[in-house]
Amino acid sequence: MKKIAFNIALAGTIFLGTGCNKMLDIKDPVNSITSGQVFQTDDQAAIALNGLYSYLINGGEQEAAAPFGTDLYSAGGITIASAHLADELYHPSLSGQYEYFAESAARLTLQNPGYSVKLWRTAYKGIFNANALIEGVNASTSKELTEAARKRVLGEALAVRAMSYFYLVNLFGAVPIATSIDFNTTQLLPSAPVAQVYDRIIRDLEDAAGYLAENYEGNNTERIRINKWYVKAMLARVYLFTKNYELAHRNADEVIGQTQLFGLEAPANVFSTTSREVIFQLKQNNNSFITGNATPEGYALTGKYLTPMLLNAFEPDDSRKAAWTYEIVATPFIPGGFSPAKYKLNARNYTVDGYRSEYYVVMRLAEMYLVRAEANLLNNGSKNNSIDDLNEIRQRSGLEPLPYSLTAQQAKDAVAQERRVELFAEWGHRWLDLKRTGKATEVLSQIGYKQPWSTHQSLYPIPTEEIKWANQLAQNDGYQ
Image 1 (cartoon, helix red, strand yellow):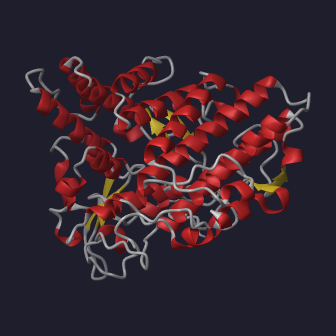
Image 2 (tube, helix red, strand yellow):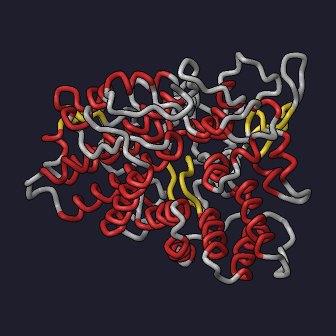
Image 3 (tube, one colour):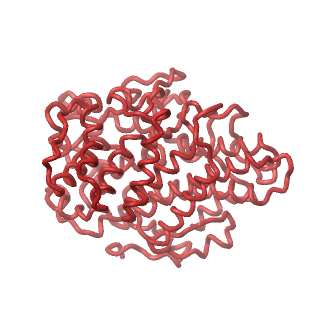
């Protein structure tokens, strides 16, 4: 944590990301803004918010050197690393030279920690950026900073902090809870138990819900800023993970009920900028000479191979397989297979300064149907209601509806199946599902190239440098 704290708080300066993505109707973000400058007026606070979002999708100076979606947890890093950790992505050669070999083959060690350092560092950078905004608002006494602006900054920053901690706790387990940019505080933080991290996430989200607007209006009509419904959707997910099924169901139901805002889309339109299924998305730069107008994740996933296990999980008439994958034609130099293609703007067809028909989707409505269906079943609710939720997704995907004659266990299995084929290669859902449902060892121990499977591989190692700088941190079991 020492290096992270120093990078964020260097000389009293808050680093909020680079890039010229005009998310708000204000001046583009700058590389660094002192806290005294940021929070004197509404416009200055808005610039800082713009920087918060810009970092999440475009990265800062360090990440911008390689903007492929792999160096930044929130721009594709979670998706790509977790899909290899699970049973979604691999490389047919199974070569030790493959960049994700440690994740794919379950060979994570302290000497070969895979992408853990990048995910840890960028998630904590997002947290410290959010903390800087929260502290700046709370410390400001300026009368030119309106109450509406204060609420907006607090709500959106708290939600970003919660999102970052959600992925940290699921990838690493016990992690430090930093709620300040003060180096003297953060350098002494110990690893917090998982339950405490989730308590912090829930408090942040519940607080954020009270600050944020419900509609997409003004300069947020593209759904590129957090509002109340993203927070409610995130709460539904978090409560499902913490087994509070009543609140998971309640929050998912609230989001689904906003029919004037949200609706399921045909698979081909789910990830478009006009999709009503989108709850929150990030707007990428379009002027990179490397990725152009493509989303970083869309670019980075191009040419990655979907596993035979995942491809075989699709039912024959499932339109999602056709809409969300493309065939890699074998040549003397590359093997054949199928690659993810949820984003059509990718490494095969991007253009510099081109029109962005897609942004990077962070949360969407289909997940809420799946959360509501699962929470309902696990809370002894109506099985038929859960089947109805599954059928909403199945029918929009060209599949026959499931019958009410399914047993309770068959309905639970159907939820897991729909989550697998609906949310594949998307924000680590499959990896996190295998772990939270206790299925990781059962599934992954059957995959030949992951043997010998060890349960300690279900968590990344804590970066060695972080433990050296802050020896209060505990290393995860199996990595000593």
